[in-house]
Length: 288
Image (tube, rainbow, N blue to C red; front, side, top):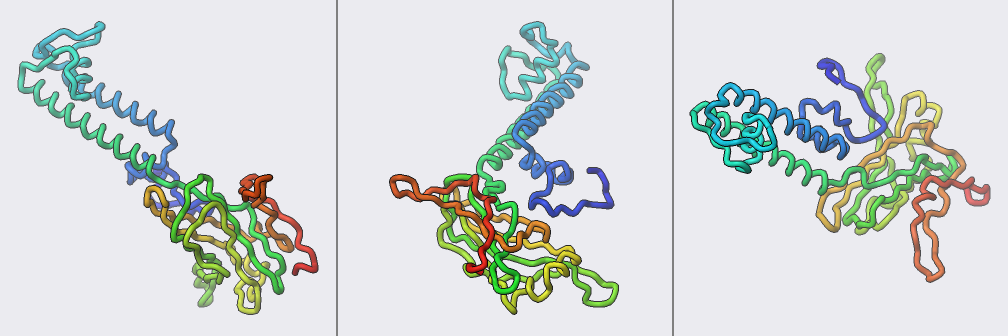
């Protein structure tokens, strides 16, 4: 977490964990779970009030008024100044106390504005709205197709959606010089004007396919991964959708295709069963 020289490379998600964003505290708070975020804000509030209360305790004699409920007068005045409220009419009578109260007020306004901004960002954000299937399916490695399926985990629709598939693997352009190479995989459809619930990306495996040219064994030796990328716009908020997922070679099932995800109810309406997202069926020989 506090290693200044090394950083981890994450391949299992697209978002950097909040605890590794110590150089970007605002981004870290946005990535925090709700319970941890509010706990952190309560801790920050209490710490700031305590600090100003301790500073004001050096000049208690110049705080005019009575504190309620037996609370020490410096602490009560620090709370009132921090929250920009005069609950009990405590007031300063020296320049030192007045200056500390002004700083306490500024700190309270800054903390409240930060809290408001982070809450708004968390409520209006779209963090991982897509659920990708656990495996990729290849019907046939000779003349088949590679399938990648995902669904949305809410009922909103995405507009002007585009998606791509990329093959990423280790390449050695010169002896002893290794680098990651990115090769696009062509898909039957590159996007849709409107994404309601689900979509399946399909790549044709033929003589021009990098998967067939290199073979799965060679791709596995080169630490290859397949990355789908989906971009779009939320119809309600106008927020941008940009989500990726990574599949290792061990996540590919050969000779399978996805099971039915869409069904028709008694009234003829088509419905999505998200529980069948990872359902696969064996490819029959007459379907290859």
